[in-house]
Length: 405
Image (cartoon, rainbow, N blue to C red; front, side, top):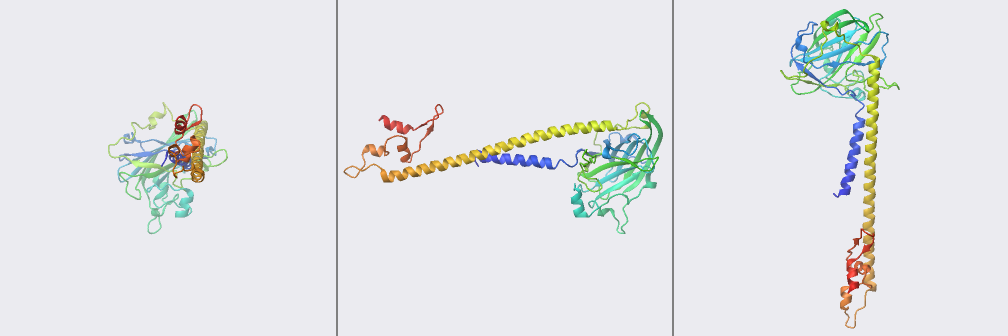
């Protein structure tokens, strides 16, 4: 493979990689991941010290950014732990419109399939998730309001009698009302959940994870807003949505891995027990903050797109230049071959006549051309040409040598 061919291949591969990167960027926009801390907490609604060191999943992305109320937006943080057999979740919520219907939704995919809505529907049927994926809804009322059939499920969530397996083993919530800050009065929910997954928790493996806090208006009973963690279902100005909804697709689930016993995940968890609220209340995530982050993301996207376009243009230019060079080289070689063939023919028909003995003279043997110049060298089949960089002319050294004799 010559250098020209190599340059063309590099250009084509680079463009293909860029196009592939752009086509895959539409899903899992947030790009979060989670590593579950090892431990066994007590399920009582209290924030025990064992939760310190667990990673914080902040559910700040409000669905469509348009709550159906004038109340401030709620705020939710989720934490995950495991002990090799059970999975544990702690949710700390500040809710300005508390309702018994408020619930934490947990989405798990124990095979980490990463399928789009279309792929999921085609393979498993409409309204279904992959076999080992499921949606759970745990209300703030705890186990008394838990329904195993709630949400989308995969086939492996069903028992033989077609009833749903109760992945949630226990759930308790401590509700602390009457907290105040500049936004108003809010209730703190401390919801702890214990789950027995469908398969064994892997020591080294990856599951898919997503959270959502489903917020109901306590005064009207109507849906108020929803907050997700990794899936970006926030509408754009043109009413389009970035990611598929997590109850229809697993493509935007974040990778969930599991820490070994004694392994650190983070140095310290910013937990929010009651005694800390008086001094430094947890402020709700406002629409102004959301708009600021959205604007920043848009600017970053535009810069990335601009840079990608420039790189693509450059690669296209390189590819075009390489193709032009190849065509020019090929044409030059053809012309040279044609010229050489013509000279050989002329040599056979119009070459020097032999002397009286039927032999060519010594000078004719040495220089069989008619003039002794460059044409004679080509005619002899010796195209020794040199390009003069100084004046751009062709100099035939052997021809000059014969002329000087």
